[in-house]
Image: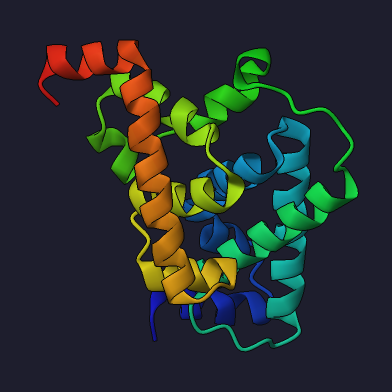
Amino acid sequence: MNQENQLIKKIRDGNADAFSALVKPYLATAYKTAYMVLRSREGAEDAVQNALEDAYLSIINQMDIRNFRAWFFRLVHNRSVDLYRKNARQPIIGLGENPEAELKLKSDSAQNLAIGRENKNEVMALIAQLEKDQRIPLLLYYFEDMSVKDISLALDENVNTVKTRLKRGRVKLGSLMKQNKNFLLEVNTHGI
């Protein structure tokens, strides 16, 4: 039994701290995922909170969860899309106008540490310019080291659809990088 399954069992047995231990490693990415869909701090926080509530209730109600990580990101994505549809007429807040959201988007994960600090902000800003169906798979694949299969589970999409969106996102991201002279100058200066 893996650690996630052990924590799920502890939650069902009434251990109050087990749920926190289960979701804590995924909260930063959950927030980033929700923010990439909603582009608002409040919306992302609401979507993550809704997903956390739904996850807890699903665990308590004995739902069979085989891959918690992928399942949880699918839940976050679905709650984000739900809020997006509900609030579709509200204006989009840019990253520069929302320092708290920008700070959360810059939170470190294993992949983020590997990317140079000076380029991370640029890459995130460029990814944020992509269409939603491209930016979320790129975020999960490159910044959270999720496999294509896990991303397809998280987004409830066909594996080939995820591969196509990753490919199109890479092409578009490359195009945006070429257009952004500051990014290229930095890349050339640091030899990245």
